Length: 66
Image (cartoon, rainbow, N blue to C red; front, side, top):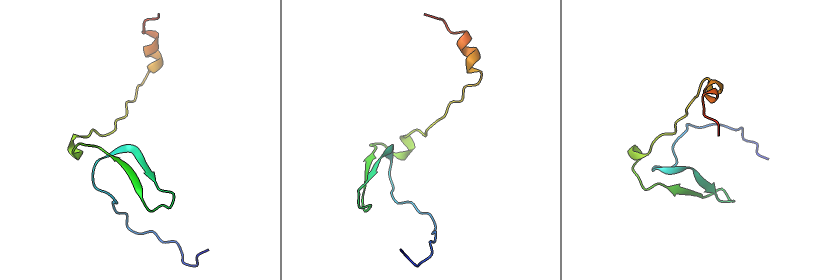
C-alpha cells in the first residue's frame, strides 16, 4: 500500500508512427509493448469510419428474396 496520493499528469504521446489498430500487446511485467507497424506514411492511412443506416427495416422490404 502506498501513502502518496494518486495524481494525474499531463497526457503525452508514447510512440510516433503508424500502427495497426488493436495490433498491440503489453509484456506481463508492463515494461514493453509489442505493436504491429504499418508500412505506410500516416497520410496514406485512412481514418476509421462509421456508417449509420436509417430506415434499414424499410430497405429490407425492397430487397429481393431468394
